[in-house]
Image (cartoon, rainbow, N blue to C red; front, side, top):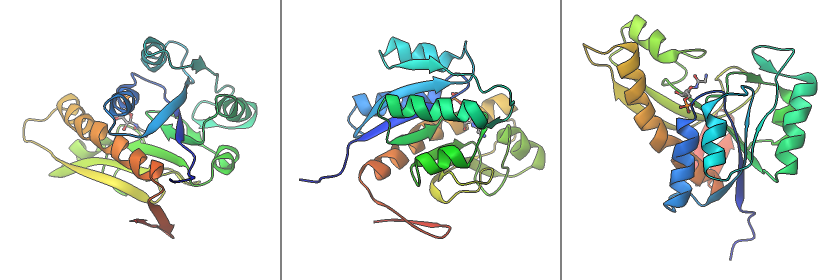
Length: 207
Ligand code: GAR
């Protein structure tokens, strides 16, 4: 018997929540041994909140104001308080469109993951599938990484490659990347649940 605490994930997202759905599905299908403690969003009308409520998962809008692109100050404290109140012991950023700062990082050290729609370190930042298409790469993909103080710079846990097709549009390419995201995120979270991520500097070894 392992004395390890069950993984209780707080999911933060700003948008449609398809990655949140993939985590919900993976838990239901027993591919991911975890519970979702809560879903928090900085966008009151975000679909991710409605999705969570449909599955009877606690879901809250918490404003990120006065900042637009980062989670800091009183807003950051409100997120930390909510995550603690719902008993989260890990955080999954799932389309959360804010940079997280040292306060949240320090509250969940080594236990915050992010999904990014490119093969990092290529194309960090926003709308990476558009960046990849414009650059003309033949292969892109998605990355699940541990979050550190940089933007999309943390140690890489799982990556999946996606070919860029000649007739791809931004929409078709993003849709194919998302198919892989929905496999990658539950896989990475399961490694965290099993306590199998050993981080040495930039490198993550699966034990
Ligand atoms: C996903 O493609 C995710 O990789 C991306 O936002 C989308 C959210 O989709 N995240 C970023 O670009 C973070 N920089 P979802 O709301 O359907 O999960």
